[in-house]
Image 1 (cartoon, rainbow over the protein chains, first blue to last red):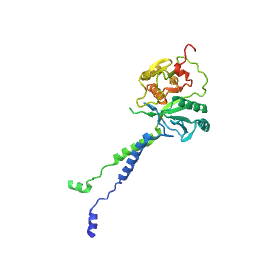
Image 2 (cartoon, chains in turn orange, yellow):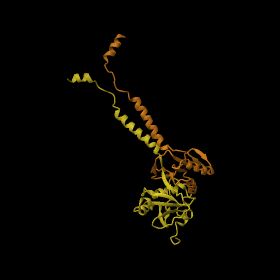
Image 3 (cartoon, rainbow over the protein chains, first blue to last red):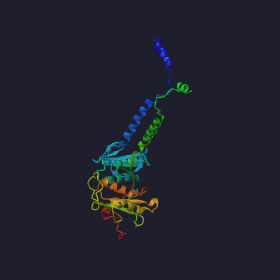
Image 4 (tube, chains in turn red, green):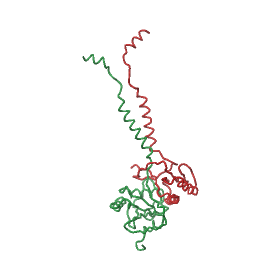
Length: 140
Length: 166
């Protein structure tokens, strides 16, 4: 016992550095999570977005209204599902609630253009003057 | 002398992780900032006072017509994109889609920013993705080009206003 203690005393190293290994571990895991999640991130109901070569980047705003039309012609405002008739009413209400809101439209790539145009007309009738059409960047 | 130094310092066998941690932290912050910017797309103007007929003159307005006869994209597009030989008409002038970026640049190059508007008249039965890809081509060389939509479907087939009827 005594010998062991004396041995310990003769070992001089007191390590004054922080042990960063757990910090690096956590950072790496967070980094990988963000890297994996970023490309699949889609706000609102998920649909198959049209692929284009160089869409503009648009920042998300707080007062942004996300309208989604799925391939089955279901309408969504943010995440709430509704029929076409309910949508016309709901988008009007949304406009009256916030006159400065912007609208982004996520329409399924398989829809005919007429369906999208009809929806844009409804958004216009509600009072909005501008719609953002959301697409996805096609990797070449 | 040498011995004395060796005794004092001792050899450090730990890796220096500080630069590693620095790089990781910066990468982490970049990804965290980029995440809310995940949205990409196109802005389309829909004038509030639709129904008011804007007099059309050749100098100020460009209408891009997309009809089934010119560009058969009624079925959802596959991975190959737009069919070859697909054409559109800009104020009645036939333009192949692969020549569209240059054509749009030529038209809008010398225009003021607020006059860079291209109106889109497309037949309703055409595929949405196809229309967006054509819009994308038109914007390729003119990044500040604004888009408008034409509600009158007849313009998509006729290819624009008749200059004679105006």
